[in-house]
Image (cartoon, rainbow, N blue to C red; front, side, top):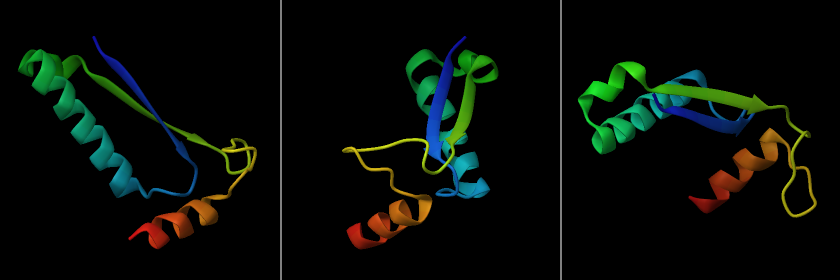
Length: 73
């Protein structure tokens, strides 16, 4: 049975977005392995507390990440 972990920065995505991630990742696994895998595909969303992760030596907050996403639009 597949087990897929998605790690996110806490506070960046809302519950609806996380539910959509779970649904679409499950659909992707089913597209590869077949419909029989739907009932046994586990998708876990894990959130890392803001400030407890880094990129490029910096520790951006959830607000920083949201601002970066808006700037990219």
